[in-house]
Image (cartoon, rainbow, N blue to C red; front, side):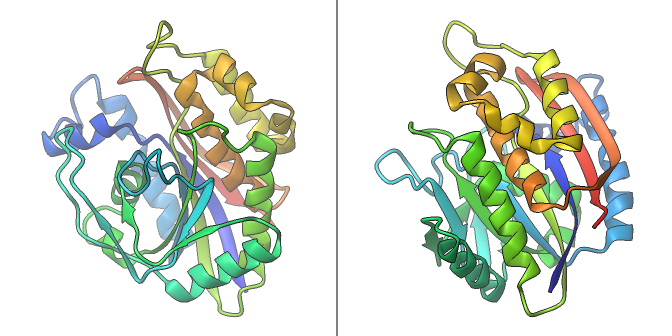
Length: 280
């Protein structure tokens, strides 16, 4: 059985990659964000995960409007990061685990989720930046990843309730895996932000706090919101909090908050780094 050790929530703004490439981690604008990662590194050394399930949203690198699945799971032995512009250098390949991926896919389909299974899959900044920041140096090449992408671009989007149920199903799938692994869930994106339209730059700190408080103690409470509710309260791109909801749902009911860092703004985004330990 795979042991879920906890989850990490992490912002995936492309400008973070540009800041790393330019060595701006100590710049006053960036330092409060990067200051959180040593705390996450310390917890990861103690938790010793060997696999990470990354719940994220693709930004047109792997899927586009003409072919955009609601949920897609990578089933490859490695995942290539491709150049996206934004001053982000392309990173090396990330290791996968096709055996674990196929178990997850088969379990999710048995749980009545219609999954796109991807034996070849590119990964964009939403995957590569958080993974490389949490496992710096050669660590990102050693941790074995299962990418789980969900649609936040082309309406209709999956509802918060559907994402919550997806996370629960992922938790059941990992619990039924016959091999012993230590797995961490990584949700990337969010928190509240809007990049376009008349509300460009919109951030809702009060709703961000509500989300984190709910995810800590009563994650199912967020399923009362519709997608349109989330857009109103968190901005067009704030729907990415559904990834955090899915990751939290994969954990047990009892968790311990290890670390929380909230910083405003990074490229018009309310940024967060959140570490939760499973207390199963």
